[in-house]
Every structure is written in structure tokens, then in C-alpha cells.
Length: 153
Image (tube, rainbow, N blue to C red; front, side):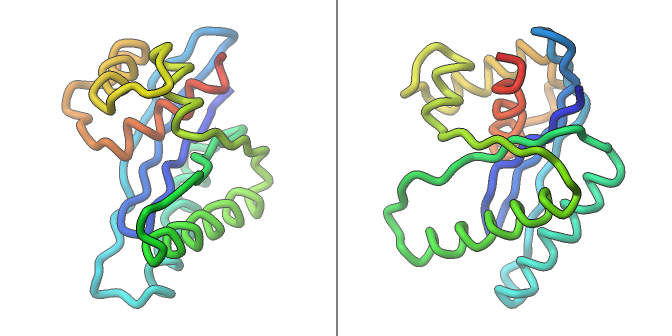
């Protein structure tokens, strides 16, 4: 099964694709959608939808997994990310992709065994479990790949 993981954001949306057969997961691809600050908020949301739609058409995932927002210190940022997440969920729904959601703590617990693991620990586990190429260093993409591992669990 091909899984698309999405780490929502308004400035950066991480995405990762993993092929899963039973309990074995294999890295396929990953990247980051970066929206320029010069675009209007609406333009940024449109860009996220368009680029995610292209990824879906190209990679043809069978399901998706998205990070669930659980709190935010900055209300303005939280609102923008929530709107981006809504656009992401709508794009996945329009592509008829069954979608699951997990909190960062759930992902960290599943991937490292520690729900409060540091980003470096999660990145190290993702690189080792999926044999991700060493040049992949984007935290957003690695978080999206970690989300994909939730489907294999």
C-alpha cells in the first residue's frame, strides 16, 4: 500500500510517501511545499492545494495520514496552520483518499518508543527504518515520513 504523509503548515508543508507491505515500509519519496510570504494568504492556500494535488496525481497513494494539531502558543499562527490543514484535508478528500490523523506525541511514541522524543531522535529513526537518503534533511519531510510509519504499526 502506498501511503502519503502530510505535516501541515502555512509556510512549509512536509510530505512523504512510503510503500508498506505488511509490517515492512520502504521509502518512496518526500519533499516540502514552501509558500512564499509575498503571496496573499489565499494564494498560499491555493498553492498548497495545487502542489499537493500534483503529488497525489503523480505518486498515486492509496491512503493518507495527517498530523493533528493539538495546541499552539501563537493564535495567529495556529489559525493560519488550521486553515492550511483544512485545505489539505479537503484536497485529500477530493482525491478520495482515506485519511487518518495522529498527534505528534502519538507519532513520536510509535516511532521512538518515547512520546516526548526530540526531533533529532525521530529523524534518526525515520532515516534508519526507511533507509532515507542522507541528503533528506527537511524536518517537515521527515515528520511526514514518520506519519507514514503509523500505518504500518
